[in-house]
Every structure is written in C-alpha cells, then in structure tokens.
Amino acid sequence: MTLYVNLAELLGTRIEQGFYRPGDRLPSVRALSVEHGVSLSTVQQAYRVLEDNGLAMPKPKSGYFVPPSRELPALPAVGRPAQRPVEISQWDQVLELIRAVPRKDVVQLGRGMPDITTSTMKPLLRALARLSRRQDMPGLHYDNIYGVLELREQVARLMLDSGCQLGANDLVITTGCHEALSSSIRAICEPGDIVAVDSPSFHGAMQTLKGLGMKALEIPTDPITGISLEALELALEQWPIKAIQLTPNCNNPLGYIMPESRKRALLTLAQRFDVAIIEDDVYGELAYTYPRPRTIKSFDDDGRVLL
Image 1 (cartoon, rainbow, N blue to C red):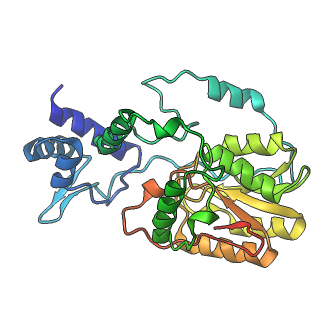
Image 2 (cartoon, helix red, strand yellow; image 1 turned 30 degrees about the vertical axis):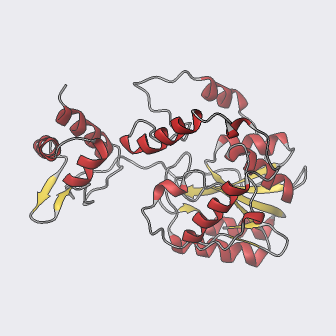
Image 3 (cartoon, one colour; image 1 turned 60 degrees about the vertical axis):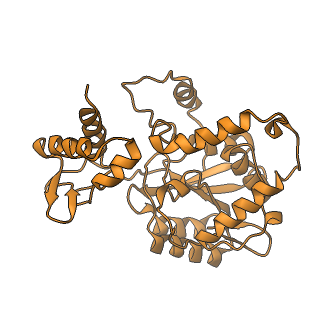
C-alpha cells in the first residue's frame, strides 16, 4: 500500500469517527508533511483521495475542510443514574474490560490511551534512548518522597501556562494518575463519605472509592458540555457531598472537553457549597495547542484541590 493511501486512510478514519467535525479545517499540507515525514506531493495525493470519497473539500487559499453536510456519528444519550449515593458495584464487567486482550480490529474505548505510533513521538523516544545509555541510570535510584526536584520545578513552570501559580514544593509526583486520584480522595474524604462523580465515570476512580469504603453519587453528564451543573446543584443541596471528582478535559469514556464557561460555573458552585473538586486531567495537556488557554487550577485555604 502506498504512502498516500495510508495517510488518506488515517485521515479518513479520524473524519469518520468525528475527530474532525463538519466544517472543521483539516491540517495543512505542510503540517502533515512534517508530522508524517512524507513529501508535499504525497499529502496532496492523500487529500485528492479524500476529496474523491467525499471526506474533504478544498477551499481556494484556505486549505482543506470537512464538508459541512457530513453527518456526525450519533452521540451517547445522557444517562439517568440513581438520584442517591450508591455503593460501587458491577465489578464483573470491569474485570472483563481490564482483562480484554487488545485487538487491532477493536478500538478499546474502556482504556484512555494516546496514539503512541505517531511520528511526533520520535523526539521523546530518542530522549529516552539517550537516558538509557547513561552509566549512572538515575531513573533506577530512590529519590525524595515528593519526587525529583528538577521534575517538580519543570512541572511548576509548565503549569504557568494554565494560570496556576505553584512552586516545586507545592507539588508531589506520583506513580501514575491513579495514585494521584487515590491520594487526593484520601486527603479529603473518609470511609462512608459521599463523592459526586460524572456519569459515566472512569472505572479506576470508582475502584478507588470502593476500596476506600466511600459512596458515589452519579451526576448526569452530557457528551458535549460535561457534567450537569443543574443536577449537581440539586445534589449538593440534598446530600452532604465531600468532594466532586470528574474529568473535564479528554473525558474518559465520553471524550468531551468541558467548555470554559461551564468550568468557571462549576468552580463557583463548588466554592458556594465549600466542596473540593478533584480533577483527573491525565490527558488535558494533549488537547491544546500552545499558548494554552488559561484555565482555573488552584487550592483553597485547607489545601484542597479546586479546578
């Protein structure tokens, strides 16, 4: 199979799956040439294939766009979860999901995974290869319980782009996001407490709540705008909710990015009821091109995480 056909199939799959929405501008010929390491003519041939298949349309001096008339895949319907705190259940289905053997012909929607096959990963792979050749192998040493200082300093610098004013001493490096979620929940809640979650929610967060003996209060969630603020407000008025745990960016499993205005409204709501927000932002940095829009990430006086 030729290079331009491979590229056309990749872009076509993304269009079919709704990654590029009707009317969206597709990546420029030059950008795709650099990203995939192919010639400009190869990209142009790929776009001609997409154009012949009705998946792309050219606009003079503007580039290629997804035809506005294309129909999007149907979005998931908003669920109707129980309007009360519940014990975490249905672990047979979760175990079945975790044990599933990856297959090339199946998209594993139960697992949030970035595309590690893209050519943009090459600089990272080269850096990791250089580190592995070092004699001292610093990655195998024990270090400060809060994490390597140089790493915390770099994370603090990166967080400035999202409007977060934190120093290295305000950060703790964990072994993956799941440990960070668990530590945050344990720092705020106790066994028997109620945690409001988006519904459907990441099964790993539910595993943490179940393991810590806490109850989940599911809040209906829209696949475009995110958690229902109206339903959340009613729940906060009715139940002694200790924390709100959600994934507003690159949500797992719905995939949405919560609009900025709704994030701010959520923060205002949480401040009004003095409830902490625990944000799982594991893939948020992959959802923006820099300079990243300023978002709200801060802590209250008791050190509890706010959005």
